[in-house]
Length: 309
Image (cartoon, rainbow, N blue to C red; front, side):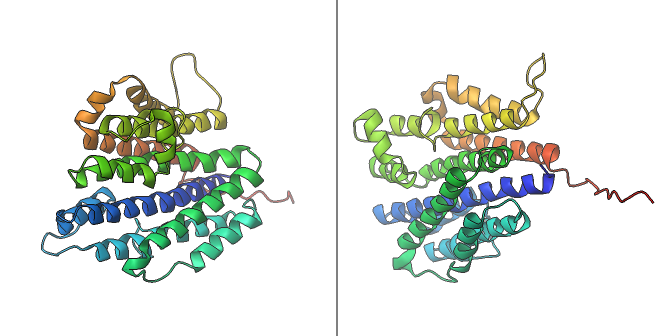
């Protein structure tokens, strides 16, 4: 497969998942602010923007409207939903020869329908619509695309982004000191609440909810599941194995975080949850860089082969 097409598919997967994850994080953040009126809105909004990779000058008062404008509808902000959807659409355009018509129409129409502004009372509906459109795009790829190398790159991008987004969502846990309701809200935002109840058969507790989202091997949005899926995709793309350990640097990075989540006691992970979530984000970013260097070399010069005269 051409590196250009593989890169586009990888980033379509990442951007579609990013739009979904950002919508979920913003939804849970706004619900947390509503649940606890004693939370300082400026501090909480700054913390959320920081978690999402946006730093603001200290003198400005930040409100929930600023968060919505920056992370929901601003097409120029790299961390916004609108930017992610537009980028997914642009990558689909570049790989139009391999992207199905259904996926192209889905991404194109979603990008065209992104509003320029969202009213405060319409935010939940907007976030739900974004999640539904992301689910539609993913469903089209899973059900109407051959599970070949192209599908592996798309799924690899999704898995890395999902691990990163779940880590960011867990980092928002530090925005409030409330225990019960906020964990319920976080589980709901991941679509994990009912799956959690079937697994633990009880009201969410701090330990069990964190364990479910961090280390559950069967729930698709847990960090361990996502990291494991990314490793599987890398092995399927390049199945060659050396005699001495793992030679693929991205696999090595992901394997390290997988081993830590698999064998480290949940109590130790909970002792410094924000720190461990930062580590997960750093690993997914480093793995993405290694994948780019190996499969999408930007320094590659096209060589044109003409007919012999």
